Image 1 (spheres, rainbow, N blue to C red):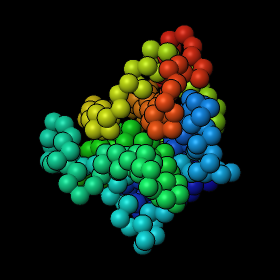
Image 2: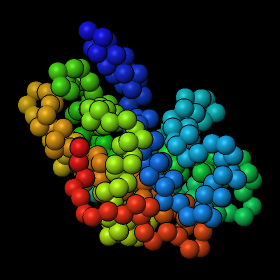
Image 3: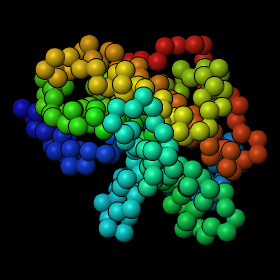
Image 4: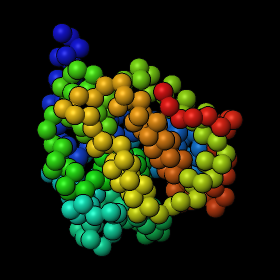
Length: 278
């Protein structure tokens, strides 16, 4: 009974804003993987901007301030909707008034602009930390048809939920891992080859299309009746883990590219190849 009550509260709180990205655990994991792959020069630059706060401390800032009227403009920047059922995300068609793709580019430009004042740069850094996480969350790059067809509540291991909540938080939470342990586990499994490949792809539009493809292949492939259980978890958690890992590596690469002329070329803790999973 207590478990049902807690999950019901979570469903209500997340459903109230269906366009949030990863839950706090997911954003922490992305930021933590990134922190561990920053170069010394980048760490110094980040510390100068954030002071006593770390990347993990500010990872959910963009979700917190979006509730304020003076940041209402940022609400549309947490994802992107592909028109109709188009085969891929297209910047001109799907991001005419701003989306997560344009936001990452915009705030990167702010951090790199010599004339930007300190407050602009601090906020730009916080937005980048969050939005690089969001763009790697598959359900955040979905077609308008998919979104409209899957707004109804489903069940996740017998408990009421929404599909958005499942991908924001419940798949991660079902592993039973604490967020620090989760981040460290994923970090240890990132190979040098993966680190190099993921870091080399710097275009947010490509990241968006990766997520869109994952959304089509995994998010919306639901069993009859929308009752999600072990089979759905086993099929989807490797996708979640890979997207979290990729986001962390790419966030580090982007920040290293902004603040350091000699970015990291190896993961902080490379290991023998291992399957990303539970």
